[in-house]
Image (cartoon, rainbow, N blue to C red; front, side, top):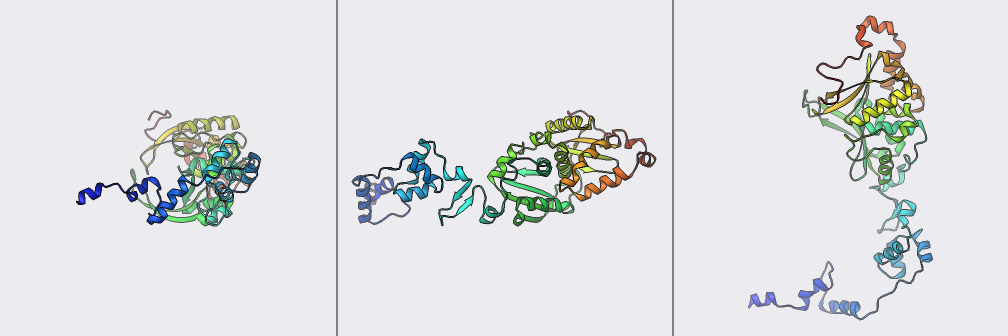
Length: 355
C-alpha cells in the first residue's frame, strides 16, 4: 500500500515541476498561482527604445522592471535588442538591490568603492605611473578574479605603503609572516608587507600593459616603457631587481621580457647587459637575469635620472649614490680588481638560455 502511494501522481507531486519556488505553499495558494500563470494576461513591455535608453542611464534593469511591472530579464532582452548599454556599462557603477545605492563595479566592499582610484592606470601619462607599472610588472600579481596585490619584505615596506596611498587602498594593507620553502637553502621566516585589493577596472587597465593573470613566464615589456623607459626600468629595479656595490641586476622568469628589456636599454643608452640564467634558491626554478657592472654605470645613471619624479626606494637610491656616483672607477679597481669591470658569470652558468 505504501509503495502504491509513493508512485501516485498528485498535484502536490507535480507542484515543483509546474511552479518551482523555495517554499511549497498551501493548496489554495498553489491553485491561485496556477490560475495567475494560465488565465491572467501577460503584461507587455510598453517602453519605447528612447524611453528605455533614458531610464537605463540612471536605473538598473531590476529598477526598470519594478517601475514597469515586468521582469528584469525582459528589460535586459529589450535593452540588448536595441543596443542600449546598461547603467553599469555607461557609468562603471552598479546598483545594490538591497538599498538602491550606487557602488563601483568590481570592488569587493563599500570602503574600497569609495576610496579606490580605479582609473589611475587608464592612461599612463607620467613617469610616476610608468614607475608603478614597472613595479607591478616584475613584483606584482593580478589574480583570475581581478585581485591586485603587491608585497615586499618589511625592509622595503615603504614601497607597498606608497603604492597603497597612490591607489587609495590603505585599508587593505596587511603584515604577514611567511615561511619560505628553502628548497636550495635553509628555510627561514620572512615578514612581508602586503597590499591586496579587488578591482576589475584596474585589472583591465593593467592587462593593457601586459600585466595579466599568470604572467610569470609570458610577461612582456609594457607599452608605456617606450614612452617613459627610465621610469619603467626604475620600477622594475625596485620591484624585483638589485643594486650592489659592483653590479646591478634585473630578473624575471620570462625570457621574452629579459630580451625586450635588454633591447630597450640598448636603444636608450647604446649598451647591452649580460644575460644569464640561474636557479632560485627559494623555488628551485630557473630565473633569467640581466647583469650590469661598473662598465655599465651609464645605464644606472640614466635610469636614476628620473628618481626625483618617482617614489623610488630610498634604500636602493642611496646605494646607487654611494657606490656608483661617489666611488670612482679607480677606487673599485684597487678594491676588487678587474671583476668590477668585466661581466663575471656565476660559477657553472652560461650566458645562453638553455640551462
